[in-house]
Image (cartoon, rainbow, N blue to C red; front, side):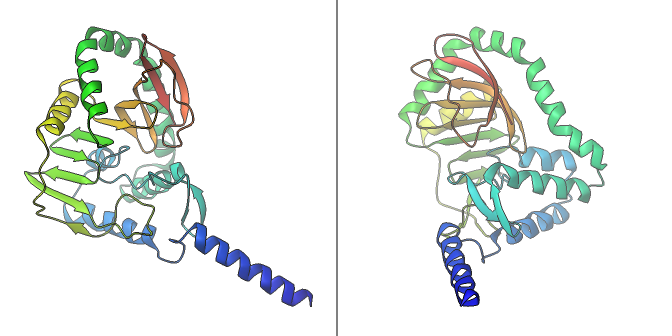
Length: 262
């Protein structure tokens, strides 16, 4: 009898996991890892370029955007943990010493702390441009804008070397990238989207992310860590967004904050 109850419980648990984590048996994480590995080998991508491409909201950022918990590496993880595993694996691939790799996130966060004062001055000196950028983003229907080193992104559409492309994402995958790419799209960015991307580049902001409460402006990022500015119409800091686990923040003026997230 006990054996039957145990089997029923195990079966029920499996069904629950399958409903909550439909990606559980699909190995999307493995497919993405192999895709990234082949990409860096094929194009002889340097470690520095890998770090740039895997920044938050960049083209190789594997972090799930809509679910805080996902099934990856044969168990349940917080979304923020997934890019750290990728970072660790690829650091080893590039023969980066384990201690060096482990120190990099802390060094990044310290850099974010040291840049707080000059960046706050920078925002106030360029406040009109930031207000114009904020207005454009709030008026636009899209949520993610990224622009860095020849790559531009608006939500799930990328522009690189004058070609538009996007990942083909399975409907049950929580990851924003995949091992399949739809290239030579007929998409093009609107005039308003181009204005946003140009302003980001002009203001040295590599990515802007609109949430339900405000806008995060990322000055720099490493794995799931980032620092930069945050805008909120009510002058309130957003601290409950799983994509930005706020470590420190400070109000700069009425609507803008400086933040560091890990």
